[in-house]
Amino acid sequence: MEQINKAKAYIYITLLLAFTSFEFFFRDHILLFVLALCAVVDVLMSPKKFVYSNYAIGLIFIFIIVDLLQLGFKDNININYVISQFIMFCGILCIANIVSTNYIKCFTNIITFIAIYSLAIYLICLFPDIKTYLYNHIASNGSLNVEEAVQKGGGRNFIIYNFQTDFVSEVIGYSRNCGPFWEPGMFAVFLIIALFFNVFLSDKPKKYKTIILVTTLISTFSTGGFMVALLLVAFYIINTGLTARNIMLFIPVAILTIAYVMNLEYIGEKTMHQFNTATVGSDESRYGAFITQLDMIGASPLIGGEKIADYAKTKTLASGTLWPLVQYGVIAGVLYYICLLRGCFSFIGPKHMRKIIGWELFILLIALSFSQTILLNMSIILMIFSALINNSKNKICLIYR
Image (tube, rainbow, N blue to C red; front, side, top):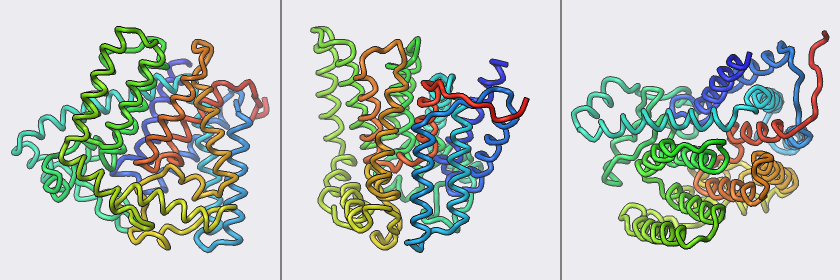
């Protein structure tokens, strides 16, 4: 039975990652809806008691109440959307029931596996003839539901690996490793979370996993990823103590890393351009996206639900730090951040008596959200729910026996 539960955990976490973040799948929300339904049926048929968290149940309830208010006062959603959101949230809660005890290990192993094969493909594509063959003959011409999505076009991919378009490669002068994700920055997000889990929360941290994840992170050339990676260095120093050895080993590394990042022509120009073009509605700038979200929150602070299209011509936002507040209003948004923090603390467990690790995970996720709209990504919500459930003693029986 234990082996079956582990297998289910790997399957559910992998499929959720794919349906929410892989370039080929993430625009087709029907797949996510079907996965959620399967999880609900799976849990209902299970003889095990259903474990729930008051925080998770409360968050779902509040989000649906806000959706219903938006249904009455906004014109950007319909009743079908509200029902599907409720089913998906319930499905994520059910998946969390299935994967909670194995979540950290499964997630870290999945991302490490993706990193291994993605790095291998990335390296062999340094040979132009091989890349041309894969790009033109193996990769598909597009992704699911692209024609109806806001983010049209997409990358050329063969499901498990996504190529950048030739245009992007020509602009920056070199290729970046997307893995199967829709862009390198999104790949960097999950690599960094896996690094945190492996270094700080694993029972037995594996050095080879750290090496693989760090090497793959470098190949993404992600501005946000490099900056947030420095947080991991700082966290490591804090958690292991400010010893002379740590200072001598890691401070110079941090200084050299910062100097290297800031002197990369691509990253330096990109960062300065984004900062200088930061205005409301400027999606190409993450700083501009942050300002835009403040404007959207001010326009509808109680129930959120402002249309991105009314603020940004691209109908997308490049930063997601404030996205829960934009989507659900200040009250529900703040409650989401509280649940996020509570989930981060729940991951610590009895082996880590210092709450500082929970704070570090929370800070890490917030920092990652500045460059990617991850906070309401169902994979991140699964992470929160899994932690909350794994630390909960609330159980009910869902079937009559």
